[in-house]
Length: 302
Image (cartoon, rainbow, N blue to C red; front, side, top):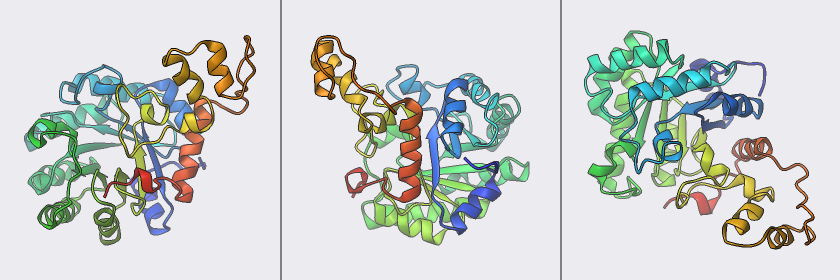
């Protein structure tokens, strides 16, 4: 990463210069240092920690106390990346509660921005937060905190009515003062159109390559996803050659067999892992976002 610290202003400049923004989730100090060193510009302390760190089935059980704790772990060491913290389920049910929750995430947790899920109904909340100097990242499309209401993890905005609603929500949240928008699991054509229409940066996850940047869950790019990985994600560590060794052993292969499958000799000789590391995988992700090779068509939802 350059010496330039990421702020809402520098992210907007990235959009204006058509420079893709690389974002990953982050939940602790060790990974915050590694991700920043590897060039990740935005660190999202996501409530996805409930699933990948705590083993929960959804993000709903994550508490504000837990979000404050993990945010502080990240911001203690992050120096250049912009740190965004998720407002967890029901912590912004009213504008007043949102102000109190944001005060904790920014004051105690050290976050530079908060993220909330929902449409135009939250415009007043966004306006109140920004009026008090708290930058807001909006989140539309698939809303993980509303998974019980949605009935599952499904692509949003495929029909004209829902697409029009997402567009109207995005414009309302921008008008209310949102500085950033995450679009999750929407058709690439809709995401591209919104990125072109909105003046604020649009970060996609399962939304195609027409967004102003991309975000993925850190564990997904390292092949550590509990259960089945989302179709829009990519295991960048496996691409470097390390993933196959671990996966083969997990499938019951002996160490020798696993080594053979990754090009190493049998009989105890280790696989050649020259140049393979977690940091190299993160750098590969950043490079793929910057060059536009990720997401590829197979990571894009129709």
